[in-house]
Image 1: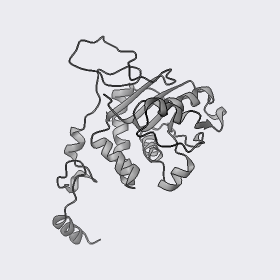
Image 2: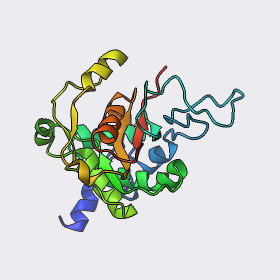
Image 3: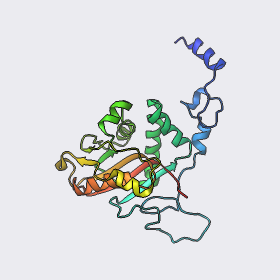
Image 4: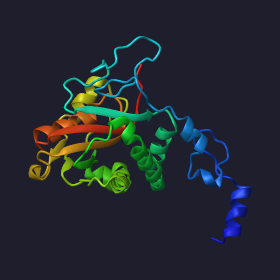
Length: 245
């Protein structure tokens, strides 16, 4: 498109931020303005050392909370960390990527993961990045696994190889949204498998996903990696966390 014509269209019909509905400046990037990105509720200490759930800051707490009521029962991951509240600009960016086909949002989301790694994961050394897989039917329908798009960019930024063909989803279960805690556990039981355990045996894995709610999905993935893949340990890193009452 002619640059002059493009500038005229932007002037006459400015794009709006999907969060605050204010007009987007060309320097903002796509769909979400810089102000909303900056004002997103990012998760900071104090949080549970096991599952990363944020803890109340206005009461006296021990220096470290090694587990909390929001931790999954029998966690198979070593630790889990989340960057932001799902009800924020980060969650809106995930929705744009996941449900509206806006693949361009993989770029700022992967950059956010990269910039948050040192703060939340303390410079850990990982052998592989593994995105939570989609069932082949859902991936075919959507056209991509959003976490593979993010993982590919994150792998490039960190130099950590990404593995997408080993941890697979073998059952097309119903979405977790709206299910009770017990139903979530039942819904993910036995839905993942490892194709070639020898390729990941004794590796240190960074498992990535877009959102963590109760932890049922990521814990089932971690269990599969630990039991069938015989990996050394699994750390979980998600873009967002649903903050439960």
